[in-house]
Length: 352
Image (cartoon, rainbow, N blue to C red; front, side, top):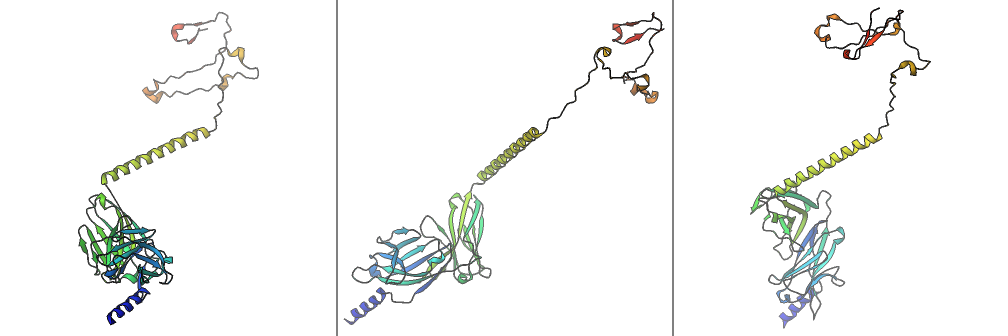
């Protein structure tokens, strides 16, 4: 009888929120995975996670199906009945998420079981929330994540998250400045610089996805948790496709530049003002019939003569120079002029 009373008293204390609150640290933009332990006798009971004190705690997420994941907004819950624990994942943390939460087990015939969790969201201005990494098939990539000093003593890990599931990983780094290799993944933690470096070798297209740099806090204990600090978005492409895409971009850029150049040249031609052409004064066939009275006939003194240099040699022989001479009209009526068509229409003057 005494043993039953003690067990009932202990059970009652747990049901009204007995026990010290444990602290969980998170960072803006990241996430936390909180472990909630319960008695094995409660494996068939529904589990839920709520915010506030146990007297006014409203459900954030609740599931009544064992060993199946339940998603509600930024919250995810998975009840692992074999280990008698359920895990709660909170994504996209903000400062407003800070506060007191309860890991709860729904009890029909008594008050529910509560285990308090104090969540604190710590801001760090130097911390990057997300990193984008691009790689090619068969090559390697490397990324470095900065983390706050408050989590420097915790083991580091790289995990991969698919959809709304938890972030899974195979290896973690517990020592500073020591490379840990697990398959194609290599991890290195430099606590002095607060930098966690990850390397992925022999990339394939299947390696593309969402990864997280994180830290675990005594995960093996009953009150352990994991914190996801920096997201890594990895995109792996085939090298040939990358080169082809680069060439296409170059060709498109060249065509755009040429089109702009010719368009500019065409517009420049349209903007030029028309050039006024001075009409040529063509001498009529018979100057004496059409010449203006105001026009004076140049005298002999106004003619320009070209002096021929005989010393220029053979080069001058190929130069055709037309020599004009001014002669007075003949006084003898017998003087006449003849035009010989065989002399290339040249005018021959008869001797006086």
